[in-house]
Length: 112
Image (cartoon, rainbow, N blue to C red; front, top):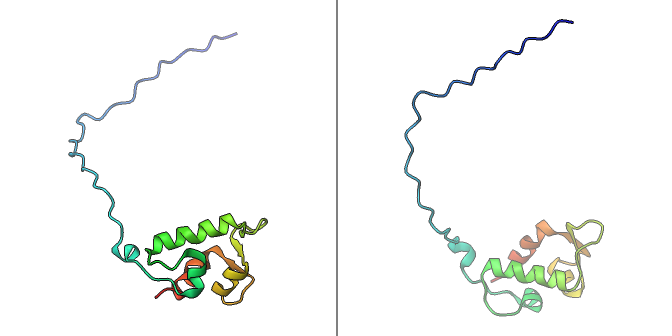
């Protein structure tokens, strides 16, 4: 049997000159959008769920989700759907179920 010759692999050629390094940019803290941070006042329908005090839209959404989780309103099979209880049914305009993506749309209609 003929022995196979082992051929040594040549190392890959490296670039002759390395690109000059650019100075790293300093990361600045992300500033929140002023429109989201402006306090809005919920009307009586929404106030039954999140309270009557003015609060930013971001906090409003957090409180809506806290209410949904606390009362187990998220659908078990299709987690994108929110099942309405009496308070949420008023918010959803009489619908028994709404998509989580529509949640902020319904909330926007109920702020002053």
